[in-house]
Image (cartoon, rainbow, N blue to C red; front, side, top):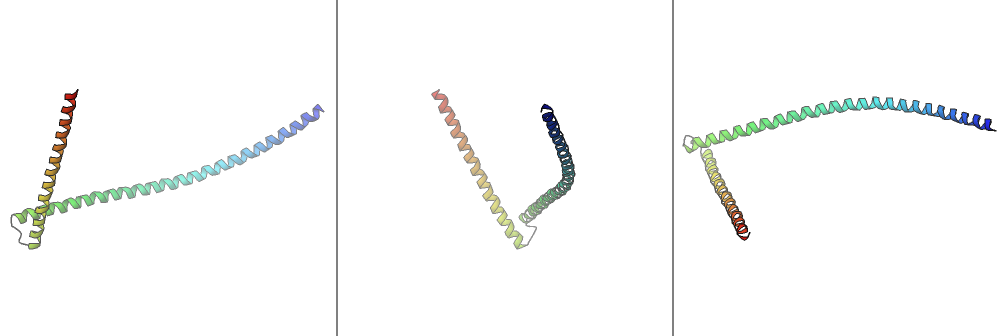
Length: 137
């Protein structure tokens, strides 16, 4: 009876080994297929990343060009105002824009002075607070 159990176990062992071999073969095939698919997806990803990178660079170039254009427009405007203030340009529309620019500059200067005043007040109150704290110590 011991031999029959041993023979039976050998059969079971062989079946299990055969099943394991088949399983490993299927796993190997699956991994090969996964490797191929991964390679294809990586290549597609690489192409997409390259495309996005090129578009991003071009968009940044456009932003830089727009900034240069805006600076040029500001410089032209400043020059026109300078010429108008010197009354070298007789166009009334430009003179009106120049007047508005002077008003805006004046308002901006007032606000800058107000900011400076507020900063000084805050600094004074902080300094006073520190002096008071030091006296208490």
